[in-house]
Length: 145
Image 1: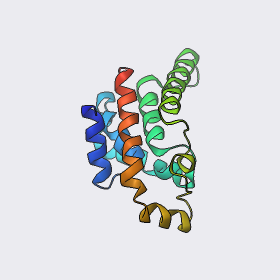
Image 2: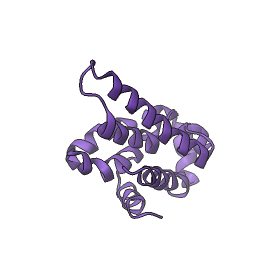
Image 3: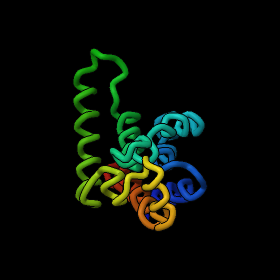
Image 4: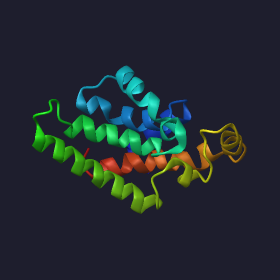
């Protein structure tokens, strides 16, 4: 596991959600302080709390925006570049894990009480999610973030 992957997993194990763990490991590189990174990532855990796009991948997408995002509507080339770079991260994640939706990756919908109960009982956070967190961080590293 890469150094940033290990750090992201430690943050995740320490109570950060998956998006926060990935985003905060890279945020300082883009002049985003740790508190702001945690706040921005807070809404994206567990597939934005509805089981959709994996939170670790959402955290990686936030990193793409921090590096390549446009800061005004007129920056069309920058907007296209961010879209392209984000698609590249998503494609690599999909190839590595076969899918990108939280509920597909875990096999349960953690946005429901029943799904959370199954996830807790089967320790999916520890057994599966930590790998997605590490993988998202490693993909970003491989791509030079």
